[in-house]
Structures are given as structure tokens and as C-alpha cells.
Image (cartoon, rainbow, N blue to C red; front, side):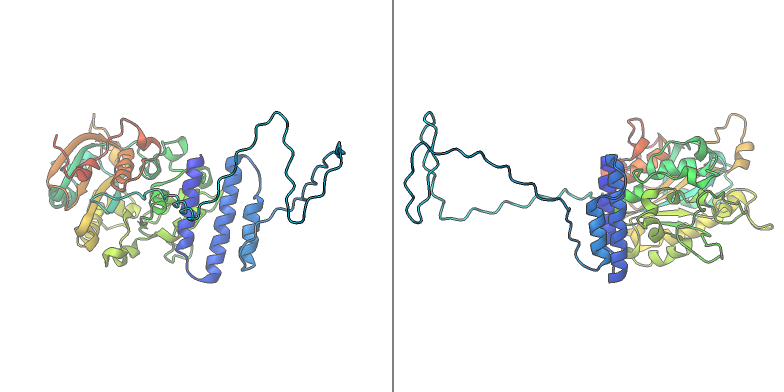
Length: 441
């Protein structure tokens, strides 16, 4: 828990350092200090905000440096008992110091050494911990779709010809990648935070507030921000109640999200369920509508180190979610995938040191019902595309959403979170770190 707090506090400091504008900066800084004080009180078992946080807050609001003081009356010095001398002592001469009497049994004190004429060298400043370093891959693009089943995606009778054809030939196929559950949020939480599925997440969190993770539960986004890497989530169709594009859209507390076919749903956006991202403004700043993607791809320096791409439920491949008379299910997902991946693959960031991960974060319920006898609906497969990999390869190791998190963490020199740290969780990061290509079956 203490480790989570320190990571959270470091992220607060990084966030404050990037804010411009005096008035806004003071407001953000005061929010950071208050939040950190509350978190510290929670971690130490004390209620309320401590005097340090309160004083710092007051100083910021007054537009003055915070003077941290504690009103404690000075303790009275204890009176020493008076002992009359056994015989009158001669008065010391002016300017002479009166020597302290020594006990009879005490040895004569050693004469003090004279101070050196040379000044002592100042102590070296404490060294800062080394910041995590990314390996060869410095831009990761993770796409999350709804799986129609492994055969319908990558098999000989694929319903996604672009994915299984042109794009497949450019990458490495993880043939044994399986989901943890059919619901999007159960897999989404695992992929960005290592959290295991719960009864609520398996049901896609019908009550928003009951699925919110506490502030000490960190995510991949928290890790990247603390290590001074950038991240962004691009979510298609995200808008406010008036229909205008908006950031970090989620249901109100105690509210139930009304499902609208084809419209934005927070079930495709796992980042809005973590207080660690909501409370300090990370979600509001970096969880954006998908229309922002092309702007950020225009220049490599504007492209985030980690980009999470989530299409609408229609374009993700859920059957029955698209307007009548348009492509539906896997066909809709394949059309969206072709358009989006071509934009990513043409970007300078991808060409320089990029990795595109085409993953499945859910199972289309209609596909699960229509699955052939004996077929595992959770088996989905994942495709890795990168200029650093030999194309048209395969990797038969067992992977899950925990593997996605572990692999991305390792690519950026970070420690895997939650269940992603498990000994049985496989990672494909070594294919890049060691300069190798993913092994074949």
C-alpha cells in the first residue's frame, strides 16, 4: 500500500510540473496536496487532512509560500537543584571560562584536536533512482475488438479478410491467446491493471460506482505517467450528454448506464473506473475521443508512447449494434480496422520504433452462441505488427490479457502490476528486448 502511495505522489508531482498558468497551477497544486494528504491519512489510519497539507493548501490559496508551523507552546526547562559549594571559589578573571569540575575517578580528558585549516568537502547529493528506460519499442498502439471466434478471425473461413490476409502477413500471430471472460470490462481491467475478474466486471459493471477501484490501485497509465512516458486512450463516439465530443466520459455515481445500440459505452473504456486516474485529472487530460488520433499521429513527438484504441460497439464487431443496412459484426470491425491501422502504420512514430497490437478484449455474444461444437469462445488470437519483427510469423505460447500488460510493462522497463506479475504469465517483450523474432509453433 505504501508503494502505491509513493507512486501516486510521484505522479502528482509530475502532473504539477507540467501545468502552466499561475491561477490554474495554484488550483491544481492545491488539489494535489489535498489529495495526497487525504491518501496519506488513509494509509496511516488517521482521519482528515494533516497540518502539513492544510498549511500548504492555505499558503497556495493565499498566493504565498506555505509556512508550515505547529502551534505548540514551548516546554518549560526543568529547574536544576541548587547545591552550595563546599568552599568559596575564586572569581574567574575577565574573559576566562570556568572549567567544569571532573569526578575524581574520571580520567583526564584528551585535548581536542585543532580544526583543520582546509574546509571539509561538501557531502555529495543523494543520487536519484534511475528512471525506467524503454527498449527498442517506444510507441505501442493497442487495439481492442470483439472476437467472433478464432476461426472467424484468423481461420481459413475468416469473416475478417483484411485482418487474416494483408495485415496478418505483416505481423506475428499469437495463436494461443485467450480471454479471461466474455465481458469487455473483465478483460479490460486485467489488461491495464492486472485486476482479476469479479462478479461485477463479468456482468460489465451495471452499477458504475460499485466497480470503481480505490486510489491505491494503479494502472499501466499511472506507471507510464510516473516514469515520464506519455499515454492516451482514443475512444470512438465519446461525447457529453449534449452530444458534443468530451474527454473521460463515464456514468454519474449511483447511475446505471443506458445501453444505446452503436453508441459510446464506458464498458469499452476501462480507464474511467480507476480513482488513480480520475482524481488527479489524468483521465480528463488523456482519455479522449477517437477523432484526436490523426492529430497526434501527425508528428512523432506528439504521438504518445502508449495509445489505446477502442472503437464503438458497432465497429468493435458486436452484432446488432450497427445502423440497419450497414456492415455488421466482423465485417464492420474489419472495415474499421483497415482504415485505422493504415493510419497508424503510416505514422512516423510507428515507422521509427512502433508496435501495433490487434487484440480482442471481449467476445461477441452472438458469436459465442453460434460457436461450433467444441470450439472455445475465449480463444481469440492476437496479431503483433512491427518493423522490428520478421513478418508472417507465429507464436504458440499461452497468452492472456495479463500477458498484454506484462509485455507492455517490460517493453518500457516497468514492473508488472497485479496478476500480470504471476510466474505463469508469458510475455512477448523478449522478442524485442533481445532483438529476436517471436518463435514459431
